[in-house]
Length: 396
Image (cartoon, rainbow, N blue to C red; front, side):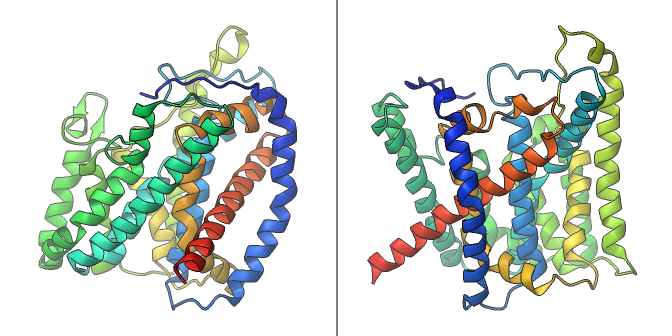
């Protein structure tokens, strides 16, 4: 449950000017990064997986556009969305629901990527070093954002809140980062156990984990042992990513296309199910439509695997320009999540600046969504790039 807090300025006053300013910087930032990353001396990496990292982060932002900006997930009561009973309103509902389902799996992808690369055991010192570096970045942004908002009068200062900024993992300011650091710390031990498993043993383990994470309605055990934000589920994704690395699925012609079609088909099926289920609500002016989300267990697990395999399988290659950009963005990716999904910045960003509800019945809804996602990504990436450069200069 989110904590309530008081803003001392009118968000509507700054809405238009602030968002216009961000967009005016977008082209400059994007061009700068493209030029710089092409010249950066990077180690040889898996370009497709680096591209997947970038795509997954864009999906996270898009998912937050839908679920935080429109449905307001995380508040005590999620809000409905006033789509109009006309062609534009109905089409925008379908697009928003499809994007919601499609982007719902993005955090899953990061745990699978981690398992994919760490299935070969690493040392505990490596895991601690990675976790410590990530923790410092998290604390930097929680403290910095809190300090700026307090200094500008946007937020009341509180000693208890200040302490929470110093303990972001314990206070679960970011559920994803809390679980991610724990998975990193456990990875040397988990990977050592997984590395010792034969293929059939590994498959048996995956079957057990699938049963633990299976939850549909009153069926299954997912609601007891696991859940979309639980450590069990995150470790299951880590284990699954490790399996796909250790025992790659048989390759066949156009396999990545088949996996992509499977992923899109799952999203489309549930989108149409949501649309048909709420069809009668369009004619009632007093009824708000619900942009649904699937419990992050069985079906999203399947769609996560399909989407992951689009990038991990097949013989297709990423274009050089995309590869250079993706590899260059990789060191700064996590900060995009830390900045834009900060618990105090979230309402300022989505309700004060972006305001997607103003576009739900506009033909500009989808272009606006795409522009916002890219602009938020580039802006946050720019901030982290500058931060890392300043830190490197200070260390010298």
